[in-house]
Structure formats: C-alpha cells, structure tokens
Length: 229
Length: 398
Image 1: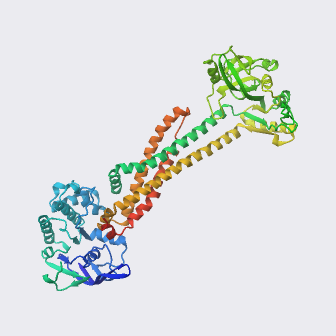
Image 2 (image 1 turned 135 degrees about the vertical axis):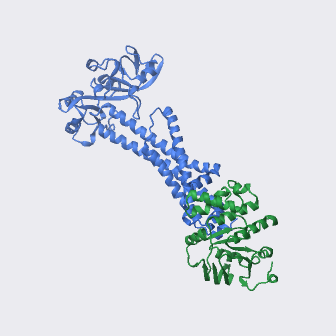
Image 3 (image 1 turned 180 degrees about the vertical axis):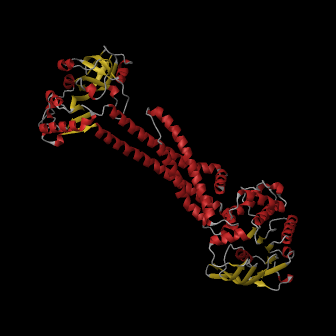
C-alpha cells in the first residue's frame, strides 16, 4: 500500500535549511493498522502531509497504492486525496454551517457522485459510526466524540484505500478517546488500511505495529523505552 | 447546482454583510435604470413635441448682426437686408410651399385684474396655426383683418389663461399687454409641456401689431409649411435659393426642417442619456469594488474551510467556482433588487417630474447583465486567491 524510500523534505528557516525528513523508509501493507509515533518536531506532521498527498517530497520515492507520487500537479493530488484517502484530524475539521450528513456528503460531491447515491452512502457510513439519529445536526449541536465520529464517517464515505488519522483522540477525554479507538479497531477488522499519527505511546501501543520517528528519521526496530515523549 | 446552493448558504450565513455588499450594486443598478429612463423619457418627449408641429414644417432663422459701431442700437441694425412681409409672402407662389408665416417674439409684461406676469409674445399671421399644427379650442384665431388693421386682439395658451384668470373660459375677456388693452379672441389647443418651453404659455398677437409692440421692424424667423412631407426637400431648396438671392451670403440665414430638428434634439438627448448612464455606471463599478473587498475578507476568514475542502478532494476549479458563484449571486441579487427599487423610484419620479418614464427591456437586461459581469470580474481575483491556497497552509491556518 505504502512504500517510501529515502524520502527527504527540507524547510528553509531564514538562512538555515532544516531537514524535516532525512531519508525515511517506510513500508505499509494493505489492511494494516499502523501508528506513526514521535514527539513534536520529529517530522511526523511532515510525514503525514506526504503520506496524505497534501505535499510532495523533495527527494526519494513514494509509491502509494501502486502509483508513484512524484511531480503531480496540485489538482492531480487533490484527485488522489478525494478518491483514495480519508482524513481524520485532531480538530475534527467539520464545516460548521453544514449538517453531519452534508459534511459526510462533501467529498462525494467533489467526486461527482449523484445526489441519490450520496444520500444513501452518507446514511450508510453514519450508521456505521452509530450516528444515524444525528444526521441533521450541525457540528455545534454534537459532542466532541460525536463530531469525531462524523469526521470518521466523512473519511469512510468515499471508500478510500487508506484512512489517515492525525491525533484523532487528541481533543477528546479518555473515555470518548477509547470509543474512537474501538471504532478504528472495528474498521481495521472490516478490512480498512489505517495509519494513525500520534505522540501518545499509550495510543500507539494499541495498534498492531508502530513506526517510531525521531529527528526526521525512522528508528527501527523501535522499543518502548526509546520513544521520547 | 450543489455549488449554487452552497453559495446561497454562505450568503445567508452573513446576512447583514451580504446585504451591505449588495447595496452598492443595488444603488448602482437603480441609478443606471432611473437615469437612463429619464434620459429616454426626455428624448421621447422632445421628439413628440417636434413631430406634433407637423412633419411639413420648415423654419428659417435670419442671423441678426450686432448693432454696428455707429448704429446706436437702432432697430434697423439687424442684417443688411430687411425682409418685408410682402417679400416673404411671395414664397407662397412656390409650388412646393403651402403657407408662410414670419414671426417675431419677445417677452412682455401681461396683466389681467390683479394678476401680473411675464409672457412670451409671438406675432404671427393666421397661417401660423396651420403651419405649427396648433389651432384654437375655443373662440377664433388671428384673422387677416387683424393683421391689416393691427387690431388689439390676442389668442392665449391654456396655462397662461389659468395663471391669469384661474380658468380657460376667457374668450371675450380683456387683458393688458405692456400696458395696452387687448381683447382675447381665442384659446389655444393644449399641447403639454416640453423641453423647449410650453406652447400652453404662449400668447399670439397679429404679426404687425407684435412688431410694433416689440419695437422690431425686421423679421428674424419664418415658419413655412410644405404642401406635403414628400415636398419638404424641394421646398427647402426653394427657400434657400430665395434667401441666397436676397442675402448673397449663406451665413446670414439657416433653414431647418423637422427631420433635422428631430435629429439635433435626439443627438442632444442621447448624449444626455449616455452621460447620465455613465455616471450611474461609475457607481456600479464602486459597488463591484465593494464586492471584491468583502470577498477578499471572506477568503481570509474561510482559509481553514478551504483547507478542509481541499484535503477531502476539492480541486482548484471547485474552490474557484464556489467563490465566483458567491460573488455573482451577490451581484446578481443586487441587480434584481436594484431593478425592483429602480422601478419603484421611477414610479415616484413620474409624479414629481410629470413625465412618463418607461424602462426598456434592453436597459433592464443591460443593467442585470452588467451587474453580473461586475460580480465575475471583481469576484475573479478573490476566488483565484482562494483556489491557489496550498492545502497544508490552509489547514494549519487559525
């Protein structure tokens, strides 16, 4: 599903060039549930942007779902994001003026799906996350856990190859956080590929495999003690 | 479809701001429509009053010269050739000419009872009524005998009659013109007001007497009617030949026919319309700048929204269209509301100005089209700015 070889990404900070990613090699198979863990400043956000096709690497090879992501235009990247990746963010990132259902339908609109199919699909995924009774509520009328489940439903709507979750439990209390993690496990068992990015070792330990990242490099093999929190 | 409903949602979510933005376009469209229709109304009225005088009409004006250095302001100083009434009447011998009436005009004080005012006096021959197509509604017109005898009789316009007597039933009454007593023998047909002054305020006197009262022995304008509209050009040539024989100088006189007068009036009026429309167009432009301003603010405010949309698969085109449609919807709604308010304002102004204002479909289409165009042009820059935002930058914007 994901194969990265020698991925580099540099940022210019004034006169200095800082390598956010300094030769990263990662391999993730289909149907895997992997966490990427690292402290802030380790480069994991940059890595997430590249995995999620929000940004492209300066050097290295990135194969995603059999496609080499390289020299793509912004619109081609948008197309890949829309069809193949479902994002779940720490801040939920729902559009406040739209109802839960409209938020879930949004990626389907950009894929050009007809209104009838969109309605059916949005109901289906909202049922999957247990929010069929809240479809016409605005995000402000939902609890944090419910908002994150709407966001997960939105990520699932387009039947993506990969679900990319960035600190999905970071804004939730431990109880709702655990519920969301349980949902991810269910989705994994249903056959989805999930990459979860976190700085929380406790969350990372719940996934079958963890990739540790530190100072722009992957530490392998990683042990619990090496993780700097 | 989806994008349009999204645009309406975004506009509705910011009702006050959207309305204020729209206001610029509303005022712009309203002023375009109202000012252009006033311009067109004026044109129509002038044209109507000119053609009401008959299409067979020719008018001759003799260029008067300034009193000579030694002239001492005597009345004989106008022109080198003094036209005599009998001279002019020989024009009627031309086959293409039906009738001829020289006129003199000037302002004099008129008085009836305790009412006192200044009126425009026209001295004319009986033929004048037929030439300018304005007879009497009661009583009689100036007769040949009045001209010969310099009788102190006059024919009065309806509005002047109302001013002086309070009604138009004034045949047989007397009035004073410049201190001299006149009896009113007829009341003119009403023709309504026009740009060139109302004939309803006119006072027609026998030509010979008017010359004396106005202390003018020369003739400076002649009204001529051709036998029919097909002969207007022939008649005009005959008149010009005749005048050239008299003056030997083309600059001393000018002959105008109704078509030329209509053209001149139309030209003036369309220049006026264009100018008014242009001024109004500027306000529409200012409205457009208002839209651009607000759209730029809106793009900045919704940077995060743009980031989210892009992350879940929106292409540049989608974002561009979203913001463009929003600005076009704002300007289009402004255009429609401007049209409605413009029509209401025109209705009010019709009463105030006393003229009939008609909005042509073309002007309405132009105004709506122009306002939509303003939405596109001034929405393009902000929409493009939104579309070019990089998703990661937009997502991390707070």
